[in-house]
Structure formats: C-alpha cells, structure tokens
Image (cartoon, rainbow, N blue to C red; front, top):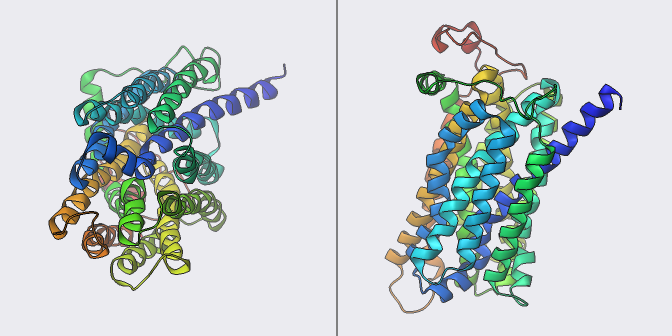
Amino acid sequence: MPTDRRFHLLRWSGYAALTACFLSGFFYRFAPATFAQSLSTALGTSAAQLGVLAAWHFWVYTAAQIPAGLVVDRWGTRLSVAAGSLVTAIGAGAQATAHNLVQASLGPLLTGLGLSVVFVGVMKNNAVWFSARHYGAITGLTMLLANIGSVLAGSPSALLLHHMSWRTIFGAAAALSFLLAVAVLLFVRNRPDAHAAETPPHRTSTNGAWHSIRQVLGYRELWPVFWCTIGTNGTFYAFSGLWGVPVLTDGFHLSNAHAALYTTLALAAYGIGSFLIGVVSDRLGRRKPLLLASSGAAVAGWLLLGFAPWRPGWSGLALYLLVGLAAAQVTVSFTTLKELVPRATSATALAVANTGVFAASAVIQPLFGWIVDLTHHTAGPADLHSYRMALLVPVAFSVVGLLGALRATETWCRNVEADSTTAPATRPADSTTG
C-alpha cells in the first residue's frame, strides 16, 4: 500500500475510533436529564440528591482531568483511551445494576474517571495527525460528531424509555464502551510513523510531570480562555445534562418526551455550531471575536431564561437554542489554547481548561437543585418560580465568562511555539492581545 494511502487509512480509522469514544462520553454526560424522572422514582431522591448524583460524573472528571493530560502526554493516546473506555464500560454496568443512591453513584463516578482521558486523547490525536491550518475545522467536526451522543441521550432515549427500562439502556451502553476500548487498541496509533502504537510520545519523571503542570499553570494567556469557556460550556453542560428537562416538565407540565426534545435540539445546535464556528474562525484567521460573540450570547440566553416571560413553543425553543449555540465556543477556545502553548504540554493545557468547565458543572448542578428545594415550599414538583431563581446561577457564571473573553489573547490562527524553559511572561507573542 502506498505510504500516503496508509497514512490516510491510519489517520481516519484512528480518528473514527476515538471520536466514537468521545461520542459515548456525551451520551453518559447528558442522559441524566432524560432519565431524571425515572432515576428519581427508582432511587427515591430529592432534587438536591439527584443533582449530586449527576454531578459525580463532573466532580471525578474534573479531579482526573489534569492527571489525564499528563497520562496522555506520557503514555500516548492509544493505551490511555483504551484503558479509559474500559473503566467507562464498568461504570455504565454498575449504574445499570444499582438499587440505591450509593450504588448508583458508582456509575457516574467511574464513567467520569474513564472519560477524563478521552477528551485529551482526542484533541492530542487531532493535533498530531492533522495540520495546524485545519485544526479549528477538525476540532469543530469532532465536536459535531461527538454531539450525536448528546442527541441520542435526549429524545431518542426518551422514546426508548417507553419500550425498555433505563437499566437496559445503560447496560447496552456499557457493552458498547467495551467494544470501543477494543477498537482503540486495534486502530489508533500515537504518531504517523513506524511503531507509533507501541512507542509513547515521551516519558517524563514525576518531577517532570509537576514541572509540566507548573509551566502550564503559569501561562497567563490560558486563564481568560479558561473562564470564558466556563461561562458558555460549564453552564450549558450543567443545564442540558440535568435541569433542562425538569424546568419544562415541572414548570410547564410538559411530558418527559416533549421536554427532552428541547434539550435535544439545543444539543444539536451546539454540535452543528461547533463545526461551523471552527470553519468560520479558520477562514477569518481570528479567534477572539468569536469568543466574545459566544460569551455575549450566553449571558443574553441565561438572562432571558431567568427573567423573560417565555413559554414552551417558539420562545422557549429559541432560548434553548441560543445557549446551545453559545456553547459552540468550545471549538475556538480549545483551538486557541492549542495555539498558545508549546506542543509538548498541549494535552495538559487542554486538560486544565476542561477542568474548569466540568468543575463549574459539578458546582452548578447540585447548587441549582439546592436552590429549587430551598425556594419550593409546597408538596409535589417544584414550580417555575423556583427554577427561575436557580437560573441566576448560570447567569452569574456566564457574566464571569464574558469578562474572561474580553481579556483573551488573539492568536491570529498561528501556533505560538516557545522553548519550555522560557517564562511565559517573557515570551514576545504573549503581548499580542485584542
């Protein structure tokens, strides 16, 4: 087989296996919104307890994200993602067989742990196998394909609940994650050269790992992007992953299947927008204007959801779509970070930013439920007023995100390579902002 044909086969087969793992992660992340009513009934949980159950995925994912970046930088994408997918399969199986809140918590805990390496592995693979000129577009395509998982977690899963239990659905997902772990071992290569599957990019000592973390945390340009991604994606993940459906079922008495359609369409807008914003950013040769526009859209969307007199129908759907489109910013955010840091620490830098997104979601989900419980004083489901009060939480986070976007560094779609021994504050390219 000619070398170029072999290269393309390895690139796209590995990309397909990794993107499928990424897709499964979006399913696990957003399924609790659709299954909220069934989980609450089966396990006997309050709104706050349900928020904590769903947030286990985000808490563990957050705690494991920086170590996951170090693992991928050290051991390579192939072994790291295969092991993560296996842990994910075990977690999904545990959730499928749980009969109380403690046992059920093991499911999102293990899926969060396993999936923590998948995101970093996918982004690292894209950086290695695709040219920098097309990185924004390929990142957008990855997010678009991965969002098929979140779409499947919405209306399709709600329809499946009419024919099978949530336990059966999670059991099937566990089997699929196991098969994906095998696919990664078979098809993924760490680099486009001989023996790349067996040879990790580089090995570092424990001291070297801590040095990498300190180096990445010292990049001042990272932190504005960190905050603006929280404002768009930390808020949207928390809402669409749990509370987007109950707002409609409790606040407006919609059926579970009807309410799930709103989050499904918002997630579809997020996926399509992620691809389009990557392509547009590459064509414009700019990153910051799109960071600002998305952050502003997030503030507007959460404010209107919290204070405007919207109802189910076109007005409600438009607001769900708006916060979903704002979250498409993640494509530009991650592309910007990849361009701001040296390649040797790119996985760790992406992991730090992703840590912020999931830490925010882990805080927002139970805090949202706590406010709903606190402001609801009658028997039965919570009312719309309680949910409007809780929506002040994503409003606050999105405002912080907009402030971060204002401080973000413009990369002009170019990689800012620097020697790892150079202090971030002294790099000439760091002064290019605006």
